[in-house]
Length: 137
Image 1 (cartoon, rainbow, N blue to C red):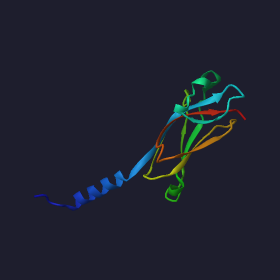
Image 2 (image 1 turned 180 degrees about the horizontal axis):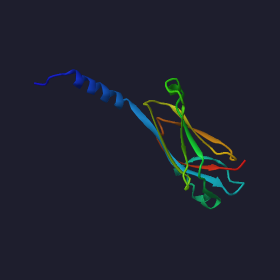
Image 3 (image 1 turned 90 degrees about the vertical axis):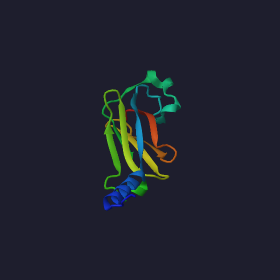
Image 4 (image 1 turned 180 degrees about the vertical axis):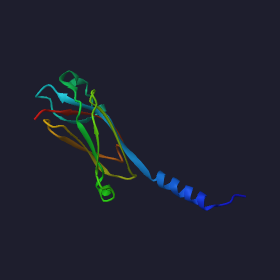
């Protein structure tokens, strides 16, 4: 026969809480446009960046921000999660959020470049791989 203790009830409660959250994960590369005619923006990796490779170069030191869903801003003091791109223009950002159908934004900025933003839906895309192209102002 099993004995129910307060610690076992507490453990089950904690495991339920952990299971009620999910996350948004975004990874990718930020590029600097070498060609003035190349359009800036954030593309999903499957949107084929290969035609642009000769017109871009990796951009180090760009800030990539993940904006929390509007529903979560009331709970958190800072709605933005930030990372900086490395020498290869690469970044990885992760934020724990509750499960649900939320919209969130990715914003990429660097002084001297145009800031770009794109909105995504967590229910459809909670793991993204993106390529972003920034142009000088």
